[in-house]
Length: 153
Image 1 (cartoon, rainbow, N blue to C red):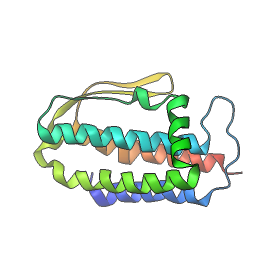
Image 2: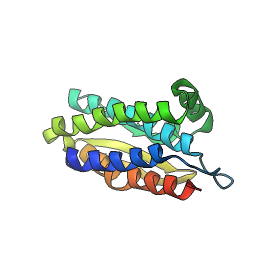
Image 3: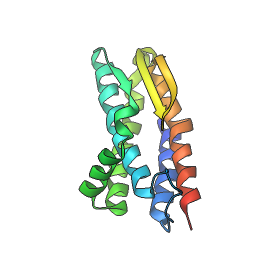
């Protein structure tokens, strides 16, 4: 994935967050603030993993720790709500978009990847790290953008 493509996916997500007007979610689903906090937390995990890959260190990417409501609620409190989350996401998205260009041949580095969506296991296998970042931009971010659109009253 090119940095410009990833930037567009983040910009679409940020536009939804900034548009506001979110209704409470259906039971069992995340509030808009929790969606934004999840992406912020996931960005930090992507950055830690990418730095390890660039340094040649073995690493695993397990997103399951970034999904739990108490952790998300702590990030929300730390950021002071949706406007602060948007600011933090803008900063983390710039950093994630920036590392794409640094990957080069390291994008082929296999990283054991475990991705959960709620309680469903989506991925549990080694993947080239560039592919994981591609999935983030092409699937993960648009999924959460759509999730936010659905929460708009």
